[in-house]
Image 1 (spheres, one colour):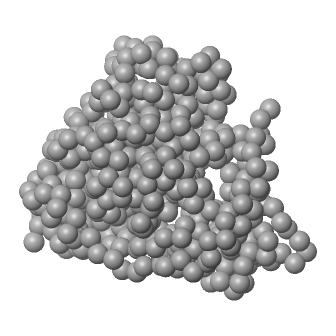
Image 2: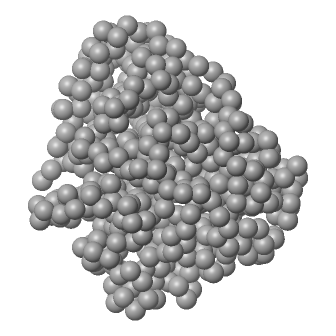
Image 3: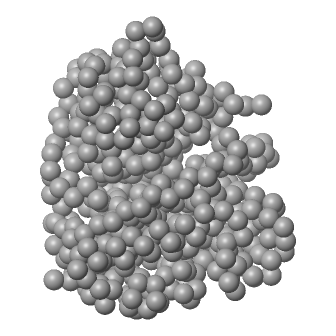
Length: 495
């Protein structure tokens, strides 16, 4: 039996999973790390905490599997995307905390760029919208606000990376400054058609090209982990942004196949094949994990999904653990007319409103904690349905099923409501750790653990299918009410 170690570095926790060549989980470990909120709308991470927690859980997972690093054929990395780290090349020391993808501090800068007429050119080159979600304005902000950073960047003393690059740098002892197309395509600096960094865009965002990592295919040997990182010089052979890794782990490798990952946010991807499809209705065009050639996807990003459950726990205190939310929500037959729009950090696709803020509509004296819990869960499904409605129109297809993964995919009540809204089966796979599995598959393909993509696709298995029960008329009515609530949350925080 050969084994692959997947590092799944997420927004709120670092995870490590050891997979066998049969695609089954052998061992796993997870550790949460701090979320730093310096000001309203700002979200940061300590890069050293990211690295330390990721290395610790990697060692823990290997120990639980009864394996040493020398027993591992390859390491694959899946990572939270867009989160921006800049560090010193000489020391590996970050110049500031990482600015997380959820951070909205550059919303005003994005508005300025839109007013100056740059939105169309940016979308044409990158497939993305001008939004603080992406990396470029975060890089610009750090260079402008950290003393001497811009001059040092122009002198080649600093390195930028999304979290995959930061992990590869540390794993390799500072030898690798790399990324893959799926991560590069989330920066606003990468030309999708050309498959390379775009000098004009870099100039627009005032980002020195010397900062940027080398872009290599998602599956391939990038280099090796230093022996002192995990205990042996293991090939680092797969890198993909977490959502593209999940698409690959779901074996959604053919045009027209779709998946949703319910994590901190919710991310819906539709594979479109070797040709990028431009969107005019709020979707993103992005690079899929690239194996043996180019591949693209349409994506809709929901900023707050599982995070709304964390808010019920940490902000309101109506549950003690996230696992309690399903039972509380199920204790009432419906949400009692309550709609919760979790626009805590603005709205993503298809609305793209950085100034929207959270709202609860329909409260009465009879509203209970159970109603709020149910409305919170339903908000995740409503946001997903919003994206998929646009996605089907944009791509000109009728969805046959939705493959699901991520922590909240284990919530039966949520998955049933999702199927009811969509009117198509929602399919939960036997292995729900598809983000980590996708990273493992990418690394294993490059090192001979798996022969080819068809062998990987043959390992995918269904665990449960949720068939829609709600009438289409009832679903349409609920969605219309939801959209009314969304309108009330829009543009709230604009000065």
